[in-house]
Length: 165
Image 1 (cartoon, rainbow, N blue to C red):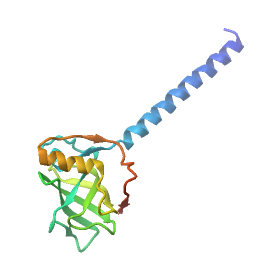
Image 2 (tube, rainbow, N blue to C red):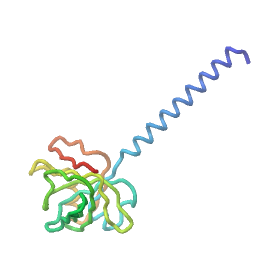
Image 3 (cartoon, helix red, strand yellow):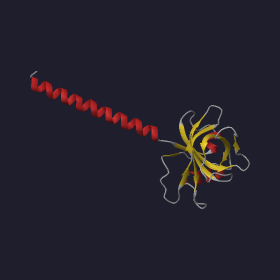
Image 4 (tube, rainbow, N blue to C red):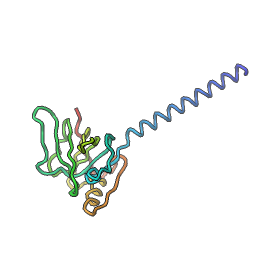
């Protein structure tokens, strides 16, 4: 092999290796950002994966919010009016977080069925409900179940985000 061909071969191999590395990193980053949406009914029916980042949405049950006086830990129950799931969150909640409020929480489900939230989003507009939550509440009332994937990009309303500590 001539030195010129050897240089070309090394260059081509570096380009292929670099391209494969870039594609692998991009796919890994995209996989980490995907979060599936599950309703409390789906979680109660054990359709949601354990120890995987997911989103759950519904209404906060009246009288269910318990705050730890020594820390920022909050425990509450989320319902879709068919089933309920206990959510534990440690951090600063959005100002609009209250009982009877519709929220979406992102986190993971533990083996005991408790949802450990790392982010809590509360709706701003009283008339707006995210499509995923609306559909989950309707499906729970009718007995069906649907899984949603991706981020909420609907411009009909906005969310206020709680900061995790």
